[in-house]
Every structure is written in structure tokens, then in C-alpha cells.
Length: 338
Image 1 (cartoon, rainbow, N blue to C red):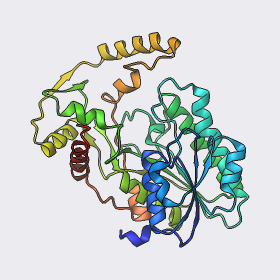
Image 2 (image 1 turned 120 degrees about the vertical axis):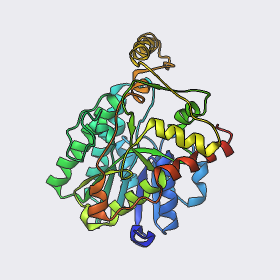
Image 3 (image 1 turned 60 degrees about the vertical axis):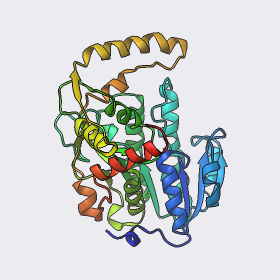
């Protein structure tokens, strides 16, 4: 699909939550390039400096604060709800629920009161499906969240589906696969492990991982905001097929001129160590150096049928896994992160 088909209406009034995050920052830059008038909600502690050249109108406060949401949504035509409490160690379930569910409720209710409102684009996660026992999963695969983050993201999405259909709120849900690209730190640990003398993988399964480059995800979000067929639908946004963690490591090593030597070890001792770390650290309010979710990263399979977004909306990712991973690896090296 050509780039103009992703374009927003000229001068569109847009609100973005999570604008200072990895995906949000790419999104607001694309919106600015397309001539949108951008508002964004950001915590008082968030660093908005890297985005100061975009002319964003900032509303400082929590995304689950009713007064902040009311002020930020006044007159907007589109909302991209990308705020998340992803991988915040030690965060209580109530805070996850406020960031994900309460914010969604406030934003959706406020959107109903805006004349000419056109689309609420809700950024969910494939994590709502949990571990995929029989891959690939589709949008219709049952929700099986495995932690507070996934559970509250699932609750927020389910609430939005019911509310929007009852109240006739125009909306679309995007469930991104694993987001990566230059600037990302979440997958940096895997890149660092891959270029070690031995790339250690836990468990003996395929270790399927489904990727989407951040630029491609943003194209999917923009498409979801304007395509008529996106109305009222949920879409998994990822590349056409999953990749194994072993192949990810090989691609990274090849891009950086390293040899990839893979060693597989049983996962259960590491899970036990992670449980002990969490048991000791949480009562002391210390971030555990190792936790179950981090270990599960290497043992769970995440593979999805992404044909719906391609067939319904004509979405075509620009970056293949090999191209995107290699580009990201070289960027990490240029930044001296590797």
C-alpha cells in the first residue's frame, strides 16, 4: 500500500496518549508530518523535550485523571490511545488497571461528547492472548492473560468493545505484535545475548516470536484511523509470519559480523530462581534482577495469523524481519548500545 493511503485528514485535531513512549513518539512525528494538530497527555515527570519541535499542545497529568482527560479531549476528532504501563517492575495491579482500564473508560466517554468525532484507535496488545498453545492465534483466539499487565489490557479492550457498540462510538482496536526498531530498549537484551560468545536459549521449544517494526505499526495505526473497514474491528498487527528466537539471533549476528553459537538449557531452574527473586524483592520494594515474566520471554510461543489486517485494510509491512532486525542491530552499534 502506498503512503498516501495512510494519511490523516488535513488539519485533523488529534489526541495521543503515550506520546513520549517508543511507539507514541514515532506516531506523533508522522502525524505532524501529515499536518495534524496534535494534543498529548503526559505525566509531569515525562520528558517531552525530544518532541518540542512538533508544536504539540501538552496536557500534563495522569491519563486516568478525569480533569486532564476532559481538557485534552475537547474538540478532538481522533484519539490514539497508546499509553501503557508496560514492564514497570513492581507496579501494583490497581495502577495497571488505572493506566489501562480507567483511562480507556474516561477517554471513550469523553470522545462521545466531541462533535464530529471520527475514530478512537485503541492500542491493545497480542499479550491479551497469553501463551499461544496452538499457534498461530487469530483475533478470535480466546483471551488468556498471564499477568497484571496483560489482564488489565484485556479488561480495557473488552470494556471498549462493549461500550463502543452500545454507544455507537467509532473505534478500532490494534493488537501489536512485539514492537522493535531503532530507539527500542525492550528487545535490546536479546541483541546483547545474541552477540555473546554463546547465545543461551531457555527450553527446547521453537521459541516463536512475532515482530512488527515500529514504523510499520504506526502505519497500521494511521490506517486504522481512516479506513472505513476498520470501524468496530480488532486487528493483530504483525509481520506475515513469526520468527524463532534462534533465527533472530542469527540475523543480528550476521548484521554485526559475529558468529552465532546457540546453547539451549532447561528453563525450570531459571523459573525457580526468578520466583525466589520476586518473593524476596517485592516485600522490600526492590526491583527484582530476575522475574518470571522475563524468563517466560524465552519459553513462550507467540505466533499469529496476521492476514485480517492485510486482507481487510490492505496493510503491507515495509520491513521484513531480517531487514528490520539487521537495521536495528546496526543502529544499536552506532549508538554504542551494543
